[in-house]
Length: 195
Image (cartoon, rainbow, N blue to C red):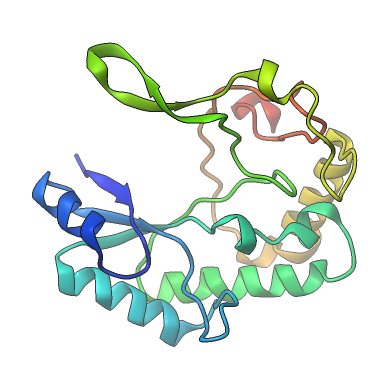
């Protein structure tokens, strides 16, 4: 079994605590250029991987943060081909560096929504949670209503028209909860039957 945690880009108190409780593998966001923009470059990914290894973690997963999630590609708007080119570059560089997992979603403009980060649960543990009554009147994002059909068309464009040469296999896991009636933007990979 591998014990992993989502860790910041640079060593901090959380890295130390994770090491103390037995975490051996890291999930990381993408590295950043000096100007704060996301980097997909080999050298920056190598430096990120080395930072984790020097601390005793194996960088196992890249999970882009909300500002690095290639929203133009997901929305099918101007700039999507650049998003796709960046994604291909990132996956190639991850492969060259033996970073085996790219964790992404195909939800545009927002990520997993939680309304609390400190909900008490069994045994006094603190968890994140979602309460739809708090979000039911939330305003739309700048993208407006994004339909499931629109996301499917953009995913097909990404996977079939632009990315087909680079796909060796797809590994999907069922995700919970199915948020398809939450807010106004859809998610595609509700379960393996979605394909």
